[in-house]
Image 1 (cartoon, rainbow, N blue to C red):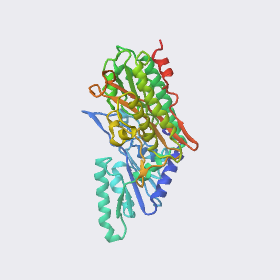
Image 2: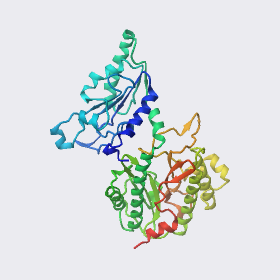
Image 3: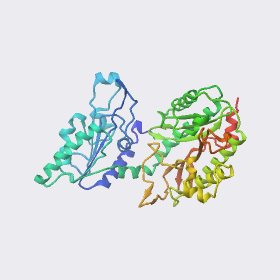
Image 4: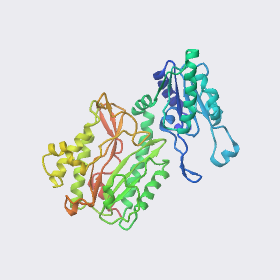
Length: 442
């Protein structure tokens, strides 16, 4: 996407224009940056900008506010940013400052963040509606709400001022759900890097290694190819750990022949990949592992085939669920008719999550899943994951000993296209033959 170089300022300008068209007339949108988070003592977490803020501005610095006020004579797009400070920049790096906000990021006007209380009132006093996302930045909430309350008290005197506070995320999130070509380009890069990481992990994993060693291989593949790192904490789950959905300790010693579930995706230029693969450690699938894997793979392939324009978001889940239930019945894990098992929810003991979620700037990306009470209709430009799985707890006394402690998930990222779908992560091996070619490679 290249937005960090800001040669694509038109991309952000077009997004702001759509946002202002949506809120006009007589409204102001106030978007705060993500707050800095402390890890421990005086050490901060690596800063990551709020996705909505970045989507509209391309600005990655903290302690900033973007103001959108269509038709305002003092400027429609105004930014409040940290001032240039040579001493502070020696420690933490260059700041854009006021001039950079205008020249590099396209603001009509820019002010230092400490001038928010001075400048914002003249926008609020002429705005009938204020769009502001409460709850994202507690300190900024206090500052903005104090100014909004002031403007509301002036309304009876001057006949203008805010009468409503509206969450702008409904507008922004609907826009973010439909991916632009530049966004898809960034996502494809994240996915290509992630595919290399998964292949590297399958080849490297051997009995006697610790899970964190494979996590290090994954992280290396991400960073060495330009990703900012993982888009979420990587799951490197061997043996019984694979039956824990969000296992992130990644510290167990692996054993040859066990299954290794890796759920890991890179973030590139603010866009996420999300891929899961399950493979035998330094070996081929055993008979039972193969049988379970084939059930999950069949469920995933059929779920992917259900994705096309006009289909519903729930269709891949319902398709995968039926295949998983039939497979568990054939393997003796569940008894009874498929209809009864689904109706009573008996399958949830072994498949307890949904099959899909949106993907984009956030790994669990924004956008409604239901519209007017019904499952959302899929449209070209949407990207969703497809990730069925089976998980049998190590202490499950309702299945045979040989099945206990097995966890399998297969996940791909799928783009809805005008003619159907595109598996954007198809370069990551998942057929039994392709996986075993990597796990047994010398």
